[in-house]
Image 1 (spheres, one colour):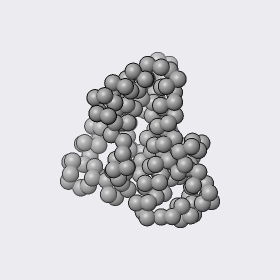
Image 2 (tube, helix red, strand yellow; image 1 turned 90 degrees about the vertical axis):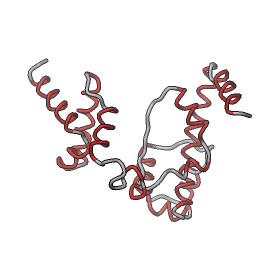
Image 3 (cartoon, helix red, strand yellow; image 1 turned 90 degrees about the horizontal axis):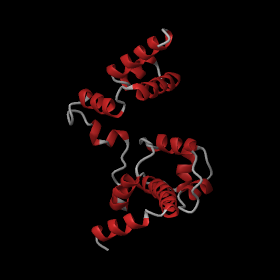
Image 4 (cartoon, one colour; image 1 turned 180 degrees about the vertical axis):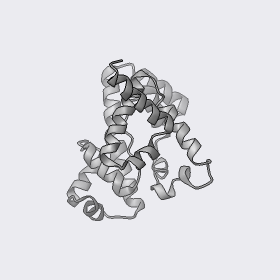
Amino acid sequence: MTTSNYKSALSSNLKDKEYRRAFVRSHIRNGIAFQIHAMREKKPWTQEQLAKQIGKQQAAISRLENPDYGRFTLKTLEELADVFDVALIVRFAPFGDLADWDLTLSSKSFERIVEFEEDPYFKEGLLGAEPVLESAADQYLSVENDDSQFIKRRKEQMEKELSPTDVKKVLSPRQMSSTDELEQNIALGR
């Protein structure tokens, strides 16, 4: 099936609510299971070795790598991300984003999941470092009413887990000042 034919068929199928529900569930279950398997094999670790890394039994890893299992907890996914030294992104998205991701999904696409030290985005001199990172953060967390509340909650959560210096490294100066401004407005009853 060509990409064009696949997109057309997918577009038609996604008009059905039950199909959309099944499509999302399938992607969650298959995508996570296959990524865990690919990252484990890249190490190369056995299921037992990975289980020891996150304090679980080998059977738990076998279940996590089984697309039919589908009972992942965020805590377990966070533990796996930590062990593999990769980011974990959990977000809601339009179906178009999922369809695009589906079109590019392959075992080769999982090879792009690299540990922080291997991540080309952070290689020194590649992108001009801090201004690029700050700009990306500012675009993602643009400072407006609802976003300011989100940034404030994010800052509070990070303060529980990081030192104040580390929080300042993660949030851009613009985001830091917006949370300070938001806190002042709340104190003044605005």
